[in-house]
Amino acid sequence: MEDSDLHRSDGSILQLGDRVECDSHRACIRFIGEVPPTKGLWLGVEWDDPTRGKHNGSHEGVVYFHTSHPTSGSFVRPKKVKGGVTIVHALQERYGLKKDEYAGIQKEELFVLDQNFKKTNVEMVGAKKVNLQQSQFNKLKKVSVYDMKVYAGGPEGELGHLCPSITDLDLTANLISSWERVAEMTKQLPYLRDLTVSENRLVLPNEPTALCTSFSKLKNATMNQMNLSWKEILRCCSMFVLLEELHVSYNNLVQLSDSTHILKHLKNLDLMTNKIADWEEVLKLGNLPMLETLVISENQIRSIHFPDCSPTEKTSYFKKLKILIIKSNFITEWSSINELNKLLHLEELEVADNPILRTFTYDTVRQLFVAKIGSLKLISRTPISFEERKGAEIDYLKRFGTEWKLAGGNSDKLKNNPNNEFITNHPRYQIIADKWGAPEDSELNEKSSALKDNLLNVKIFSPKHPDKGTLDKKLPATMSIQKLKTLIQRLYKMNTEPRLSYSSHKKINGPEIELDNEMRQLGFYSIEPGDTILVAW
Image (cartoon, rainbow, N blue to C red; front, side, top):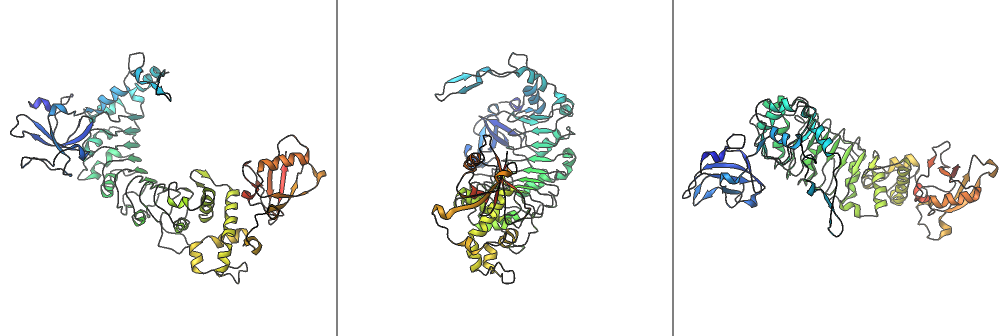
């Protein structure tokens, strides 16, 4: 075995610390030399997947190298590994002009399977046109060399000369060994805004800030599945002085720390699929001055709290946060939802796959979220209309009205004095009562299930048919809007479908609420006896 076995295809030589691939598994070279009694060169490698190896770098009592895991080490012959290619080579391979009919696409790989797993070939239309456009390297802006075994940038200046317009670069799952090698590429790309280096093992520089000029305009960094601690992530981010968006999923993060000094421009942070269990760790990010979106789905959070203020006050944490995505955690208590109302500007919330969603029916849970968090505009990407918020809040008043009165609540403001326990459990109740009026005793009595006891005495009026006057009708609260439209067509002897809205008898010159969902029931819109249904054609 000769030293020539250590040469890559471009003539460069494998060295300690370089990354290689063997049988589709990536590893880092920790040793180069002989391992007696065998002859010839061996590479001592540490696998990214520790189950791939057999030892910790020792052989027959001799320590040749050290590993971070007791079984992540192996010895392999240089001929068995792939040392990688330059990014210029990878770009030419992926985006270069192809002369064959299908522009480099393997026709036999284009197929779909039916339910019987029978293959049907798919025709690729426009492949040559797309390839022709992509092969104009000087115009390429978004490029990906995903899993193309890139190890370095190649000759100095060659990448910038070939692709000077790149704004978005994806280096996921390659053989790059250090941030210095990443910087050698990015310093040639003056317009780079978005960088992805996920699934790499990059050695951190001793002085990260020395590389800042190579990332001078970078605003979005993605570093998923890189086995980084939060401290190491911050060291990386110190190179990105204008960073606004950061993705660090699948890094097994447990602990966080105050990051204001480094992430002062950060607007969006994605911590999805880590191992954060304590909300106290999340609070360490609460002083990020520009943070608007926080994703902490698929962690292990059980509760949410903001200890700096009372139940009815606003927290000083996360002053600009608008979007919180906290799906697939372990939140069980409604007290955590009360805490979210303390956020100053929370507008959008995603909470799917948390145990709290199983405490009531889906509709009831959604209503409670709407009522408990006053600033929300979307839940699970579904907008909250004025009508829905009104209905949810009025229902909330009725649902907990008896408890409110027993706790000292009273519609007479001079006598209204609910105890601290009620205020803690229902911090928005008084705000909602002031907004829509405290519930009357008659509204709190348990309702009969008999149809006659659940009829709504409403008025129906059509401005286009003043001759009909105002019609008084008793309608079941369970009647759908669709059936109501059919009834009104019969009453007015019209064939065209009417547009319906209603106005509350409690508010003179109040807003007209559109009955815009035919599948909803009258009760959903919180229509009350005495309200007027307005008919337009």
